[in-house]
Length: 347
Image (cartoon, rainbow, N blue to C red; front, side, top):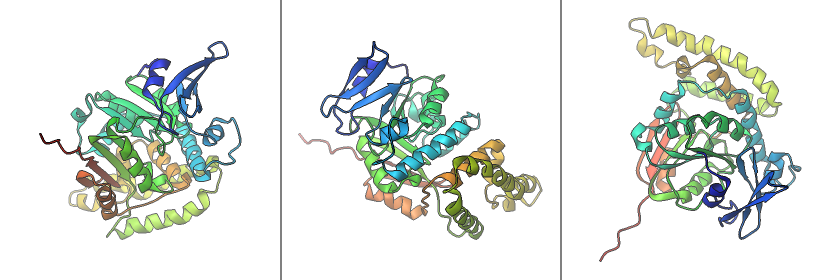
């Protein structure tokens, strides 16, 4: 959305104390800051992107200081995904159906007129489609991926990208109709705490949607592959990002050779379709090869990776006291629920 600097100042809040912000122009109006009216924290607007991060993480990510004092795992995660989305900024037509798959049971009509928070927007592909279906989208990400997301969502309009920490979103409490976080929480040190924090920004009666990596049950082949990947991650998460990027290509070739191409062959042979559906990684048959490369980079470079059973995801929703909860399979677990509305006042 094309908000003016003043409109941004009015819409956002200090991530530290949630107080209102004021606009401050400096150096002959060439530098713009959002300044907290209570704690006086200053947040720069750089290349039209508000950078609502608290010190020292802000200085570490914006290159204005050392990483000393910043959460090392947060910083590593942000830089890892910033590197990833800079290498894979593409927007594919296939993302349209992918978005709807991750948003089930919500269809396109659900988004019209809603104020939506994309918590961990990556390259902006889901924010793009949420806005396309009529939502007002506020998309946040911790690291340099925001630059890619801003570019990818410019054409659709109605998306405001902000560099911010989903542990401290720069918004008023209970201000969103719908919050989603797809493929992000499981990369955090304490995913359920982050999930519970996001609920503070959801309106009563609003809904939340999350996607988490699964820990397959009753699927020995998938469990064996994930165990092998976990062993590899002990090495690759310590390597330079460029080296892991190079290794992601042969990993994707192996995935296509052993799984995707056999799946494509078996599914067209009469009587073998049911066998084909049991093949791991078959989801990449519907995407360009680079999507598989992207996912291998994600898998082997992200510093933290948590996995969950279906029951564990259901327990998250139960502990959050959400209503109308559901957990569906989508090459992982998609959990959804509604924040209870306050009881009606009796006359």
